[in-house]
Image (cartoon, rainbow over all chains, first blue to last red; front, top):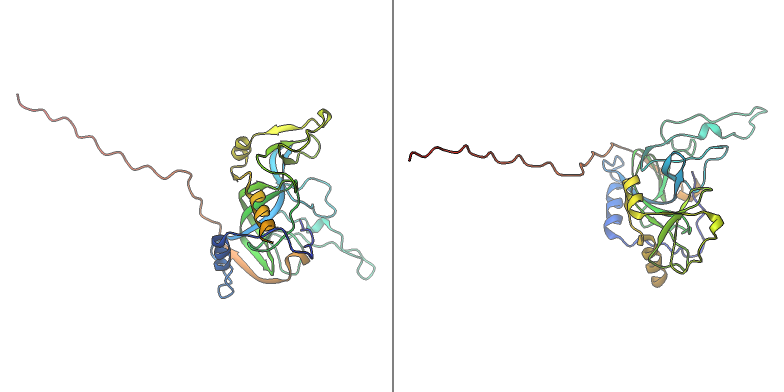
Length: 225
Length: 39
């Protein structure tokens, strides 16, 4: 799992919630390195309808992994570091080991999230996830890498010119659930897209679904920039 | 991961306590037995 590189221009993302920022600042107080409360983070991911059910899938799967990486709303990390080949060292190829929890400076496994207030690039067609991180959590300058994650709230990231009300659907190919607005052109019948009910999605994932939160945040950021 | 910057520190955070969906219901008050009134 990894993140897109940050854009050098001003990001469209601004985190307006003072309460969440305060909570994050409290829980990640440098004077208290052993936080006792889960750390709040935000990330982009995908909501996917898979043969096994509805799950979250990362924007980028780990290298060298041929299967779909998916995780439930509440999950413990699965380390994929051992599947990645390291460059040849002294004529021999070595493989990194698997980890039970994130280790600073060793491997890249774990659930990644940005710290609240951190600017990050929007990607239309994805979902914004508000998460709690716990277990072993490696705190980085701009984000976290955690052993355990719980998704609390999700919101679809619509296209740049889309506005509410949004409707959800998924296609038979990748199964990604995406949002469209009334102005979006209808998909061709050959796309075989299946509508998704907001209530059903909320029931299946047992997380809060806010259809307009990501859109509102992006609109606010656009107007304030 | 360059995107999140360099590691700063490590936290070991216990699993959050499960919050029940519904608050526990108070025990219903005991209904007094009917008292026979001498007629």
